Length: 181
Image (cartoon, rainbow, N blue to C red; front, side, top):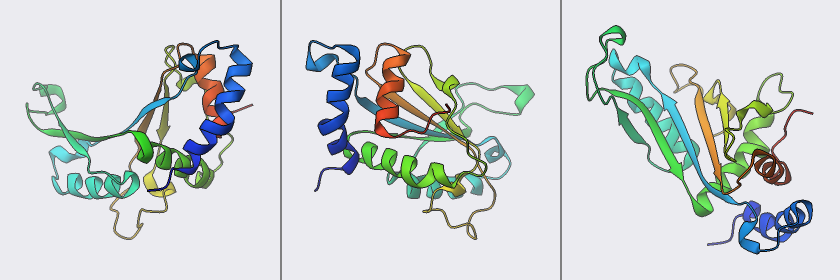
């Protein structure tokens, strides 16, 4: 299998840029991507279980990996949730598939967002990780709008080895994430 385009770009260009910018002495200090977690909350699955199947198929088409069904750990009567009910799905992507997904996200999906002016900088968590919320899954070209029943949002968490947010921001901006100016 060929090496993903974004991984080759990271190894050739981004590593040198980050080493210059932050004066890293060791190659292992340079931040890199660890994993990407894509999560969809399905509160409507408690009434209609078919929603779970539709969302699972869509997330599998987007990420190329079968999602894990997340179940409620305990019952919450105010939300009408019983222990063991499915309440969401998630996918953890690593290695080559992670770079392929991030490449498609940056170059194909994000430009298709309506009235897009850049990714907000408030998604960093203080430890070098970035969270991106997407309001509808239709920005991905793998989704067939006719087969989908409704627009669902998702959370994309990009986990890096960066120790500080400015290092993670530099890594992601060199990879091509369009942050707000």
